Length: 251
Image (cartoon, rainbow, N blue to C red; front, top):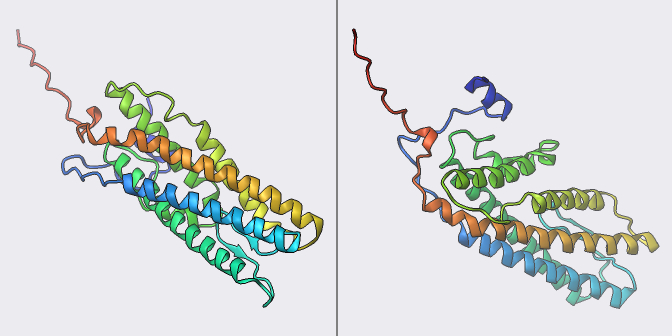
């Protein structure tokens, strides 16, 4: 049987297991989920409006690229830029920033709440935010944390007798991260003009739409299940002390 130390090491854990003698209360997360979804919808609508405006005025997209939950790469046009396009671009940046902030708050809070229920977590709570901003690590750690949130929540609820439907299936999580990686590749290789720019913009918008919709689903699915954690004793069975064994009588 593997030792506790080897299990923790394999799960990339560098911190001590949670101490359940002084339980930390769970944090409310419903509003974070609600606001993240709202601003994703707003960002999606504004992004599409900006794309249509570009095509209507210039026959090709020129205002730049904008992907949700990704570092913004904005190509500002010359001083002839229309006021409508400028306002749409500013609104896009504001909506993107708001959606990113609320998503990260939801993501970190979901991981915090889960860590109050399980004894060992793959990462410390700070990685739920910090991993997005560290090169190389941001390619896989956020996905691993999201996957852990889904899997460990399902395992914990099942162990407590709850029947989980399709809310916590990992399929949408895989698509969410695949589309995120594709969006990053697309934004890094963006032609500035010509037919390639038009094709790239169309493909980018398709990826953006799919990414936004899948992200909304991932948040919604977990938001339906997370309240169940509030209803369960903060000390999981394996955190409780073992029962005392009866002493054998000496002959």
